[in-house]
Length: 357
Ligand code: NAD
Image (tube, rainbow, N blue to C red; front, side):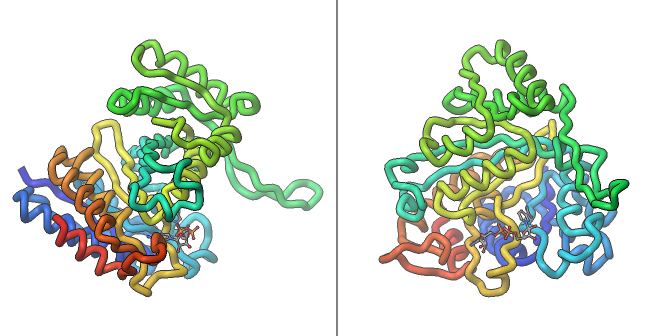
């Protein structure tokens, strides 16, 4: 049966990296006769320019109908001065919440070939393989009330609400325990339960789930310590689970352990495993249009999409092996370049992965 993938290139480097990811998907589609079909839509700034809103009803309908979504990235200075309600990022938050993509999986894997590209000592990061499971549709990014109000004395005050209901914690908790079962069976739940009530409840729910997964060793860590431990001794972690904002920050820190944010894919899944796949990085307006962006995070997102939403593990493994092979060949985009390697452009990197398949 054919599967439909909605392609959303987005803004900045989005169209450049998506073009390469699509070449790779085309190649495995043809080689394995996967029957994958594409639909197109727009999100973020590109959608604001076309439709006046960051997510149109048409794209949302296509997203609901698709088996998976492949996204580049959204945002950029062009749209930064718009009303916050219609900025590009709102489109991203809306598609995640409308499709209930509550589980964000962010693997941070250090390819041995890139140990030198990390800012940490190779012995600290060599062999690193962490999975961060971030809650994506709740917490302070969505909590109400929120806004900027004027107080009686005329001073303005910004406010947001950090809120988690038990069912939201439970479903992301289960997802994380299940991921841990497929890996080294170690789960670290990150919170700030010494200060924030919402995360006291978070910790309580994680403890309540633990007996259902007796093989998984559950630990808890405050987010400030987790940030420190990630740069001190990151290999102590296997799976980490945390709320939306802490996960946003910790996964970027984990990204840098691996040398470049340009290497890291992500998956955002609903309860049925349908999902949206995108690189962890943003639209990198500083390098957009120069043909130097690293497309590997997006290409690796295609592999995650094949594995988690399309149930096609074989081509997923093959894409990951092809990425490893081009790194073995010494090919590097500027962000992961080190002396003695061969510097390549975005499209040369994409072509090399296709050739390695
Ligand atoms: P960013 O991730 O876009 O860029 C951070 C740094 O990493 C920049 O120096 C950039 O050049 C570099 N970088 C990022 N991706 C790269 C790649 N593939 N290859 C090489 N270098 C890469 O983060 P930012 O600068 O904070 O944000 C830029 C825009 O992206 C903002 O509008 C922000 O809101 C948006 N953003 C979008 C998403 C998303 O779409 N999921 C996520 C984060 C930020």
